[in-house]
Length: 528
Image (spheres, helix red, strand yellow):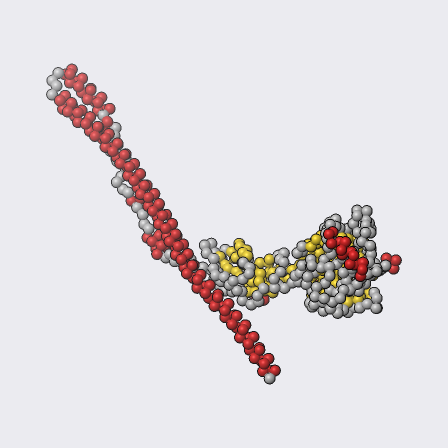
């Protein structure tokens, strides 16, 4: 009976998943159908605009060429008219001279005849008729302004829709997600020499599988990509997945999108838990800052309740010269009773935890202190950490501690034991947790130099833990475990507990403290 119910439940789950898939597909079809009408109207409008532009260009060319013909006509007419006027005037002068010469033939007086003959000779020499060219200055030929648009007509008859580039194909096997970078690779189904560039679009999503038409995030666009591969750098993986699609473009048109793909971009995301942080800490989503004025109104009430509950309570009025409580003074740790919500940290436990537990897997995050921060700790803790407990001073906390107050120090701390770290304090600290292997490692976030490693067996979920005094911390999450860290951890795990890198610290505590063999050994005088 139970097996049949289990089988039926699996069938119901399968049907429900298929129904959801069909609903998304129908939604996609309806969206595509609506876009067909919209896009059809748009391309008709674009076509009319192109033809109107072509018509306007042809009309402009016609007017320009007609004007050229008219100008040529005016030029030739003007030259021929001038030549005609001059020829007519010359003809009139020649006719008059001819008549004078004919009359001179009838002169009988020798003196008069000689005089007339001389005049006729002189006039003939100067006559316009003999000085004019008898060739027209312009012809009636206008063939140099004729046109033959047969080639253009053939070209216009060959007008057709642009050859839109085909949709590229994303090569899923060549895509890579590493170090908060995503490399997307694609190819064209056929060689296309006219492709000018590509457009890559991406968006974050919480849904696996085919991208949904309507999603919480909009598509981000990367234009003018000249190769068939692109790497997105500096991403914050605050979603489980990312969708990608790409389209090819020639000089005039963009092709269809490729089939979208979904890549997994899981990373550990958390914020500071302001509900349980010390009242002297001003907590934001990914920032925490020491606030000496925080919770002053509640201070006296809190002190009264705490003093009633513990005979070992440390007087909070131990002040430094600046009037700020010293972080070095410790109070006896007390684990509060198990309850739905934990108490706020108080006393000198200037602590804030992460709001998300680590229960399995490998995770990484980074912490950057303010430059003038006097004291801070970064590490892990069980949730049963007492509200008076300080990081590194109990058997359920592990941390690295930086002290820039009075005397500078950089140490790894656990169970009230400390190991001085003979390395420079980095500007930003990377924290790596492998819950299943029981490893907690700290790195220089810039160059991924290992600072310190704890080895232990976690007996319950852990949470990121932080302490800050006179300064502030900035948290960066949504980070994958860096490849350099993975590579180093793989090498370390392959050593199988070699004494060159691991030293047993305290047999009574299920915890080893591991170091580079370059680091010096612990001076017993430095331990509390």
